[in-house]
Length: 190
Image (cartoon, rainbow, N blue to C red; front, side, top):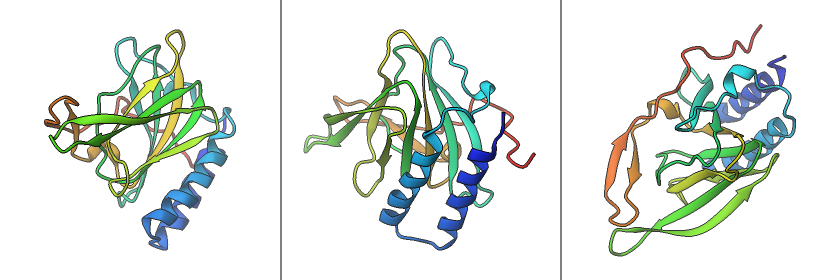
């Protein structure tokens, strides 16, 4: 299995980010690049598609050496979902396989978080998050009986960024650093 699709994506993202574009341009152009990547489901190596029986898996595929961006494979077992959380940077979600429900949450005057809209992402579709617009959400596998996989791109090394999960009822945050479940990343240059 060739990594050429992922390599081309990483190269194009790197070229774009070298120009230091504004975030709206990053989200627009990055979404176009990610849509091209997830349009084909033939490039992701099998070790980065394995679900865990209890919780979703976050596999690092690429981390820019200057922490400009990272690319991550999220593997959702049946019925799995994230807690309500933020990112502290821009992000793109490209659906590769299956379906995912992206529910946006907004902070209320009393500090609690309420869901405002849910979007179902289908293979080839791309969503986004941003502290400037809507950074708090919950992501869930649409299916109760099969795995779904999405490719996420973030404006930093998301596995090292101090972020927050929230109790929606109270709005109380809890800090966390997600890390990754893999210790080896794909060799894009072989």
